[in-house]
Length: 34
Image 1 (cartoon, helix red, strand yellow):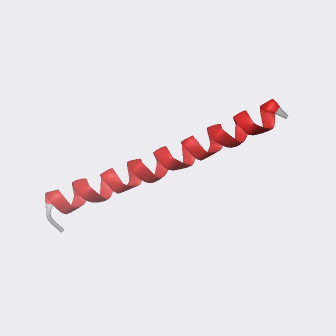
Image 2 (cartoon, rainbow, N blue to C red):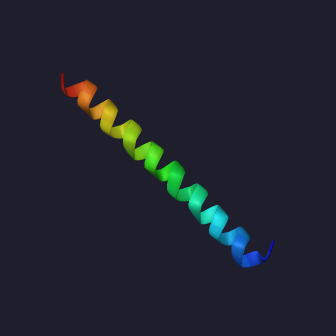
């Protein structure tokens, strides 16, 4: 595995985590407004 592939994999992980955090915040806001 090259360094570039490793960096792309790490970027993908960051994007997945970022997406999960955004989803969690949206759910929290929706539940908070009920």
